[in-house]
Length: 289
Image (cartoon, rainbow, N blue to C red; front, side):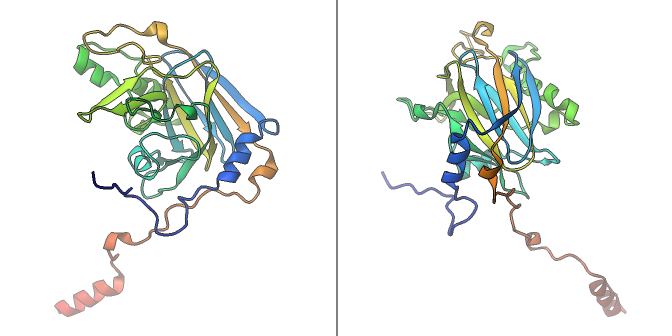
């Protein structure tokens, strides 16, 4: 087998290099941080919330395994939002501690950096699966109708849609997700598969907000993914559905001294186009005469 080279590699130091000691200090100082907000998202529902730049946010499985579909936007500009495809290329199809979620063009900068992950131990299992994936998208009522011929209003897409309405967003703003606490992979035929979540009560993923964020999370109607939701063996998995909890923390001020929100991508090349000018227009008209 010929060697494989990762495609997206920087040619010099830059924003792809993570200051590991900085993020590890943030993760380690649990006594110095201040709890700003805490809430629980019930089963088969969703909620949106804000995380100010420079704050930490923790998503928790308080009662045991439960998949969570996560969306994130720039709080002041929802056109800047998670770009799952580019994040897969820059970080990987599954993310964990020190990985970042990247935003859409033309911004292309970190939205957040993962500072802690209690499931980091899972690694790669015997099937080649990993946890916290960017491979699959959210379940939705449209595909449910195609697969089952029935309507169901509590898929992650619908949960997220309802969650963001108070912030002036709509179904068109809901985007491809980070599937938290979800174990997934691609089989030998390159088809997506899911396995039961390994999360236990108290497991969590924590991230640092690199800019002012609007986040939204759905407690997946498939619960811990141990029961088929579609197909010949499917049944309603409501008995394996559990809530998720969210905490927002303000770290000790000295830990973020010198940090600032990343700048947007510096490209300003106009895609090879030159804007028209008045002098060019006049010259053209003079030439016609």
